[in-house]
Image (tube, helix red, strand yellow):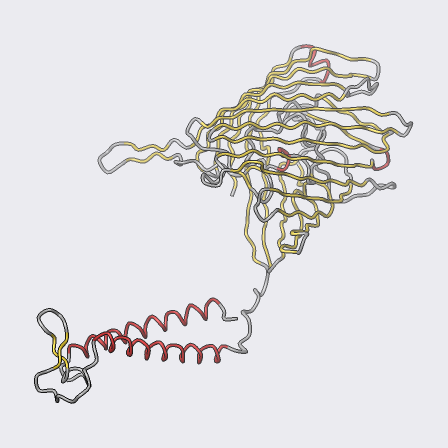
Length: 495
């Protein structure tokens, strides 16, 4: 088959030949000595052609203008076909374009700078100790993304990493692995196969990048609780031809809690098996997704490494103390299921997930944990939450008009307002179920958010969180009525 560049060259040659031939024809028709025409045909005032007065009577009728045009056109087509055949013959045997000498590289990163003010009642202080106010980097990441033919790679590091249970006033900054993987694209049936350290295929909110989430922090049920987060493993994922459905399945080492170091060392293996399927019952093609309905199901089987399980969550504030923190050492395995749903109707968006988990202990007893969240958001400026149909998650918000402020030539000031979004979320988690373990409990959060998208890559976020909880301060002591009020803000940019 001819390459695209070859076909383009042929088309250019053909156009040039046709233009030159047309110009020549116009010149010849204007010349009265044009062979076989100028001496035999005269133009009448009506634009018709007639036989000249001095033509012999027995001569055949002179050719019409249409006959001349047809004959000339056929000759030109024949010449072009011959030239195309010559070009095709010359192109045979030419080597295919050479592959790149080395993988392509693109830098990427994100900066999220937060400030948070905490107000606790005495019960909350007794439960989880005092939470000091904080100003700092929630995330500061650099990444390299690249490809080589059908292979992709990502290596991303976070320079503002903190451990799951650390206090804000400790100097424990560290550099942590985030997404570090290699993947192969365009495989039959499997689609894409990824190997390395990355998020397991579980949860709509968890798999949506924190660059694109509606709130500063994900819900109580997220990473560290029901969602497994990033682990070492292998995963395959793909999407349907219509891009109405996606699926993913993977096997991972079961690290406990939040993102863990990339090294996995346990005497007794802990293995995760995770799977996710999504489907769009409704997607408005005409508006490119300003109307859609998302559904999804997730499942994870997790065997505990060395019988250890960590279950922890914070009150939807990255610098806060954990309000649930289970560290159990008698767990055999546990199973988690999740049901996803989301609706986008122009600037209005609704999203919800329900989680349920069964924990099986080495003594044969079980505990049932569950949680949920639901939120509503609305764009005051008319935008909508974009959706990535190949991954089954939400994507980057692009304002109709970026924020800007400039002085015009007549001395006035012109301003762009960006995109403005308001949102409310309720989330609940129950990790008690009569557990006689320190750190068990349940909590409910109400979060109000205001987002200003200055451009597709820069935004200001304001969140107010009211959190209420019950907490086991010891195996035999439970305190109820803890209350925390959080006002926090974030200035974020990614590239």
